[in-house]
Image 1 (cartoon, rainbow, N blue to C red):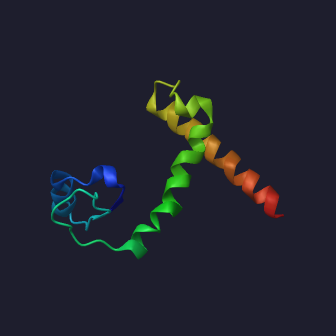
Image 2: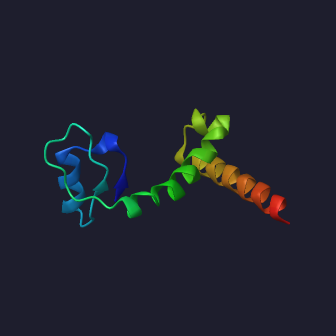
Length: 92
């Protein structure tokens, strides 16, 4: 589980381990006991974050106008397809 420094809390680390995952959270600078941390693995976090931030550029997705989960999911899918098509057009 990759997470940002904001999630560097012992309770969150324990919850992640209880669910069978290994936490890889960058320790805060003021933390006394520094847990194990892989900076190489942490850099891969940047591959996931743009995937979730790009659909938020669409106002309807960011503000969640749709109240029903099915409608919201459909809008997220449409926004994702539009982003994919835009990226595909620029490489063709």
